Amino acid sequence: MIIGTDSGLAGLVEPCRLNRRIYTDPAIFELEMERIWGRAWIFIGHESQVPQPGDYFTTNINHRIPVVMVRDRDGSVRVLHNRCAHKGAKVVDKRCGNARAFRCCYHGWTYATDGTLLKIPNEKGYDGTGMNPKDPQWNLQPVAQYAAYRGFVFATLDPRAPDLVTWLGGAAACFDNLCERAPEGEVEVAGGVLRYDHACNWKLFLENLNDTHHPQTTHQSVVDAAMDYLGTLPPEATKERAEAEMIPPFGGSYENFEKSGITGFRYGHHYDGGKTSIHANYSVNPVYRDAMVAAYGEARTQEILSFNTHNTCYYPSLTIKTAVQNIRVVRPLAVNRCVIETWSFRLKGAPPEMLQRTLLYSRLINSVGSMVGPDDLESYMRIQAGLEGTGSEWVEMYREFGRDRDEGDRTVGTGTSDLDMRTQYRAWRHYMLGEVA
Amino acid sequence: MHTGDALLKECEALLYAEADCLDRADLDSWMALYTPDGTYWMPAAPDQEDPLNHISHFYDDRVMMEIRRRNFVHPRAPSKDHAVRCSHLIGNIQLAATDTNAGICTVRSNFHAMLFYRDEKRIYGGRYEHRLQHTEAGLRILHKRVDLIDCDAAHKSLVIYL
Image (cartoon, rainbow over all chains, first blue to last red):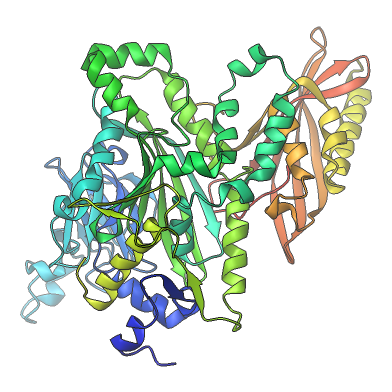
């Protein structure tokens, strides 16, 4: 089938059915990289990763395009294409570090941290050739747009994309909540990163985040194993174990998940939870609570801590857990492969136990050695394999269709609704076909 | 507690016994080689100093080992539907420190582990550090640290201890 035409593409995503080829066809993947990942705001990193002038962090904006996030001498954080203007080499190859200037390893072209070309060795060879080294075309090029919201740095290759705040819309409230959970109102990256190789299409990871109908099946084994063992211990022995709070909610009933609710926004953003989520019954560290009350007062503290989301997805590259303070970053590589990074955050002004709890969660649920993530990935890999089958062209997302409520800037449904799926595919059609976001 | 070569021999025997349990994917016998307060740690960064304030791939104490060995044989753990077969080689075993009063010694070694899982052969390699405790039943593992040479790379699911 030819997908070179938009009418061919439009037929692949129906209101409640998805053609298998959006997960398996390399040509569609390339189009997604161009139209979704080339038009949306993509999460690059957090300002706290580059605290000092010259600090940098490198990543790719889609499966190919290398960029560098750098703190300039003027204190601002910039996102530049990581490509030498001379022969095209990646100028910065280390994942992170500090540089007074960026020097290309090939012919020594050297750039300031704002991207300006500073020096070409043996420059006289260009005299009188018509090549003007002061022309900005010979600088490291800035990405079309970049901006930060509460320290979270995004960039887009599309100069016509709406500004970041407009694009985030009501979903920005989850960034606010994450930061407000810090007594000092700010978070910072801490405790390193996990990088998890996923042999599946990038969308399968995103679609699982607020799929509240899978934990009861996929994660039954770890819930059974935990309950079986923890049940043999006296209650006082499990009281101090955060694992005893973190694992069992994965076995929550469908009714419980329904109560959590799902909220969808424009551009594919959505979250599960709000009043309640699988994180809602975690105990609150008393030292942390005191610090929060000292900073915000009792009523506001209560308000902040009771806004309890499970996962918030900023489509297509970032998902955050406000209540746990970790995030996962999607880095697509090929139609059947992506890397999922897990970063953890310190709440400024909170006791060290809070970061330790975040890291425990990341390790317990998101690491390659965990007993949760590998069972999710196993499901994605089986979907990836199954969708090669030709017995049917379709998968479905009908659950609770027609029962989602329109509330102005957002759509709200029960926690087990496929509203999260439909929200993502509305955005997919927006980016891929130019439809209304 | 032995000293010198006799102690080294005893340490080697324990390391081989532990590797044998993992090769057979027998987590029940494996756990029995650890002291009740024993821990297993696989850092996610080179020279990682701390399992609590930095992320790790694994950091299990007895409670997590108990949960993990139950999960490992659960009939409805999708990632465990595929059996995992392992072959460990341990070499360059050296006694790094001995505290005869406390009955504790530290042993460092290199390891290569070949895994077969989901129709795919994988190679893991790196360094082990074992802190061993002398007990009435012989040496037991107080702490094992596994430093993969590619600990900070993107990894696939790892459904068993290395």
